[in-house]
Image (cartoon, rainbow, N blue to C red; front, side, top):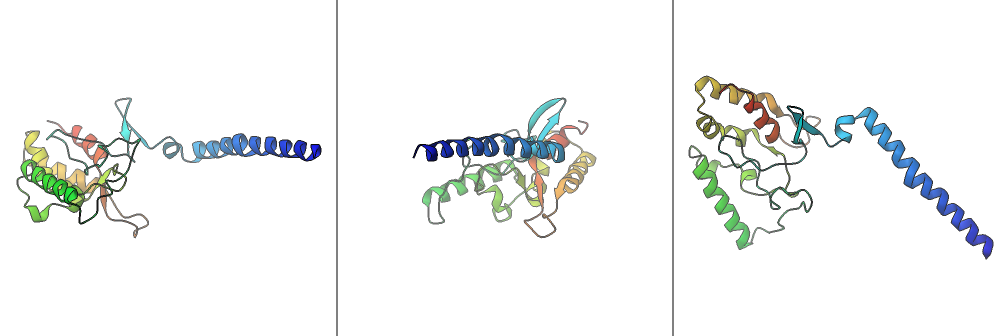
Length: 192
């Protein structure tokens, strides 16, 4: 009985060192050398300052910026998650109606039928960093007006959206999308 306990303790110690120390260090080393940007959270740096991650959505309240998809957790990454409200939920209907009203106020050129669904419904994680190119293009007028852009700068906005549009992964997974943080950083670089 005593020898079995000693053997168990030795196996426990060896597996703890192997699985709890060596393996994580090995995988971390491989990730840092092969994919350093991804291993460190796909952070975006502007003016030598970390401004966010391309993987986590952020809230943009100003009319001079493109708006992100709504978040059920107010863009807080710690309790990420959706609202879990179903299609028969009155609360969901109220939220969608309020979001549609807010969209119509801030983007008057858009009719209610043309509002992209991702701008009305929160994503499952509540942290989706992307919107569709259509949702971005529908915000051009508001952003251009808020920044006092002329028609040439407005065309530059459209070009930036087109340039930043990401294709579906492997040409078949998902839809075309635009990262809102990257888009807003790009328009900050335009001359005012």
